[in-house]
Image (cartoon, rainbow, N blue to C red; front, side, top):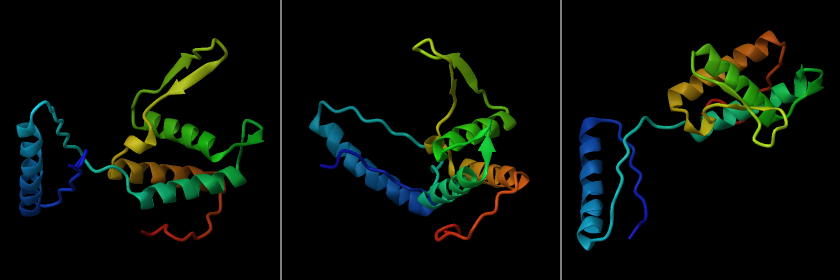
Length: 145
């Protein structure tokens, strides 16, 4: 028996069939006893193509832009630009004292939790910011997936 079932729902008839299939599996698990299940319905998360695009953009930024006197790696740019985008959207960003007592840490939502629409918005924000900084993007395979 599978440990997990993931369904994509995109239109009513298909969604009904998918949910009935899921119920068939869930019913079997529940009738077997000693099992509790969780059902989560949420918007679809970012796609692999969106993730590739975002990381390709961040890679170009990391090669071409200095920040605070130095070139920064992709992960640093991802944190900086995601935090800026979230602030622009009015979402909370927390700056907290580091748990080791040395400096501060910025705490905010992870990009892996973004919906497709949010990831598209973040990518547009990153590309617009990069254009303002004079970043030249080269065409990359998979950008238009």
